[in-house]
Image (cartoon, rainbow, N blue to C red):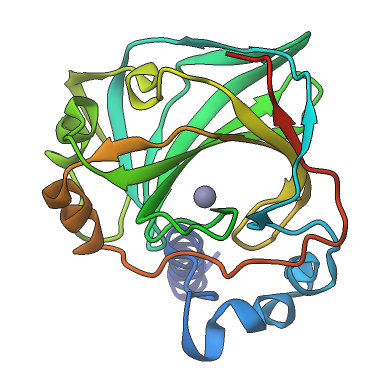
Length: 249
Ligand SMILES: [Zn+2]
């Protein structure tokens, strides 16, 4: 390989990595906004042709006896990334079990304002804990966020908010346990949906907790100073079944 081809190869790899890292091909407004996602890339076509897309307005939920969600999250050092679309905490720290299904947690991230609505109510923020089931299916545990008391775990995370998009930062002396980001009641809505960002992959098992958590006004403002408007618009429900747990605690 000549020096020139080597240089070209290295440059190509670097550019490819930069594009992958910040994924500039889609955004939340303008010419690369949500209405265009399905056309931006062939692999994003579910965004426009999918029939079980997320987020949705959760209405007309059918009351059902749903399995209890058991939370088994562990303490892990903070691994945080500003990926150009949100703040994401990479968190391979345990699992949740829903009946006989086990979902290993991968990461959690935030939207401002919220994405799913509950009977038409849009929350100031929403947190998504993304999991992979042992059979490969994805499962999201979604938590609505309201203005109120400050959250101590969020305070620890916000203390290390990467202001610019870039690679993951690890803070070995900052211990995070995502169970401290959940409300006491784990009653939830259950329905099938998709990723809310390209490629909008379907077959995602959504569990939306009925009870919100609170962040202080200042904590919400801190997030909004980085991302405000990173929420995909509501998608058609298309008569999909939405179950509302009545006996799960
Ligand atoms: Zn999300």
